Image (cartoon, rainbow, N blue to C red):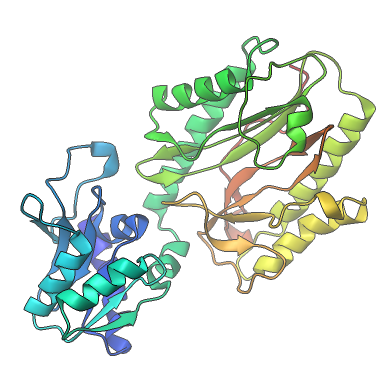
Length: 368
């Protein structure tokens, strides 16, 4: 694995050197972890002229699920009250003889950017842009394996919940139980705050659990994800509680399911991001739900739950193989209810069987 991280840093170094910059400072935690195998609290990564340094404000805690630094990156721990790691790293870059430093301007605050300039006034600061994020889009098989295991954990947690008694329990209680089950089955923790929406709350996009109790006849919409070795996945399902679904519930569910299937079938290397969005969106738009649609049909996942690519109407770019994405159309009807179906898949060529579905919990409209 050490060679994997060394190769990632080499690719980034080639990028910044080609732009005429001698060194690079990576501050976004997910990017630090991608390049150094670990990202202790407050740590930054300096790709220096003579060596690469993981600069930490204090000794990193031994938490295996957070990863351990790559052996070819030297750990540089600041003395007590040693200040900001990124500012210290800029001074170290200057001490190595660098005359320029590429930084992640999209992550640095204005105050921190000024501090970098003041501690090493001889350094010319340039913007590294989203170079690391672009390196992260295509995953290797080890990364995909971590996402796959996370998906298995999420499926297991959701499946166990569906076998329990749900009527009378609160949304908040169900969300907490799901997150506990994720950890029980080996996850680092939830990939994002778990959403459980019942009845009219299912008509709210991005609903956060409340003390509303599950009632018979409710739509129950659940969205959760697991983090495993830093990598994240996402799954969303909608069910009906207690009784046979009403006609309007069946109609709405079948429509969203058809849209999700259309988006999934469009996943292939070379497919335009916006065309995947259009394939799913058109099904719902044609049925008259244009105003109830989400701003995007899906997105990449990995060390963060929302990564590039964005499968959205105006998104530019085309899919590559080995890119994990979500496909998650939904229709939300305020005050009435809604349906969301969300899967994590990996883009694969047709010769390899097409898109690989990682989240396999049934998408049948079950009455629980």
